[in-house]
Image (cartoon, rainbow, N blue to C red; front, side):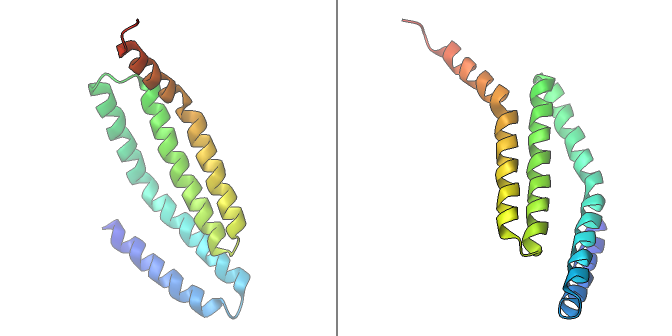
Length: 130
């Protein structure tokens, strides 16, 4: 099971980080950065399976493909922004992490505008005109 490998990798990296942070802080951070990237690459296969499942469910429900792609992009931005923010927070750069999170939220809002517009138009179409 991959989760066991990921957990063991995380534990080993954490122990090495604790040992190395007093000796060489920059190398210890580099270790954490590489560990995060490795874990992300291990998980990316499962993410693609989830995306394919969501797309097939959208097709079965006759949801416009543009909306499904937009939702998947939003999910991707959220995960990537969280990963970047956590890595910079691990480096002690909380202000940069906050900026990454803000940028992620803005990009998500930007991508969501067509969906929000479609929802508002659908609601307006249900309201009887006076």
